[in-house]
Length: 123
Image 1 (cartoon, rainbow, N blue to C red):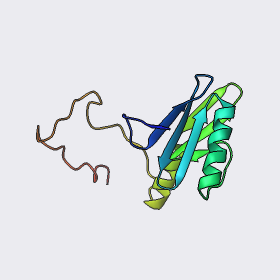
Image 2 (cartoon, rainbow, N blue to C red):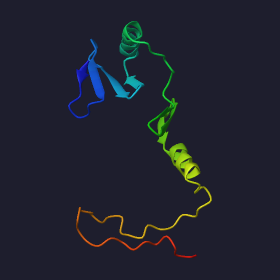
Image 3 (tube, helix red, strand yellow):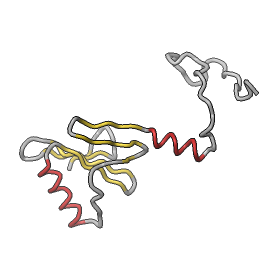
Image 4 (spheres, rainbow, N blue to C red):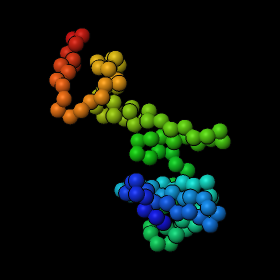
């Protein structure tokens, strides 16, 4: 496999049928993807032969992203990740508010004044 120049955790290999197989590593998780099922199977067999690994089946959750696959395509969502953060911080009953700044503003380090703390508005 060839190490990606764009990301140190991504590796790829071009198969004999000129298809690419991608392997993404994050700590102790591995994601393998390709439109070449034979290439995926060969890579999984190689990993099983040389490392202690477990095939968890189709990707469902990785780095806070839920993945739902169907015949019509793939849908990704971070809903569960956001709900988990809200539960951990005790903020599940909070009401949303509009962003107090222009979302198109280009922020630069050490430029401008900080916005005031609006945490007590409405109390």
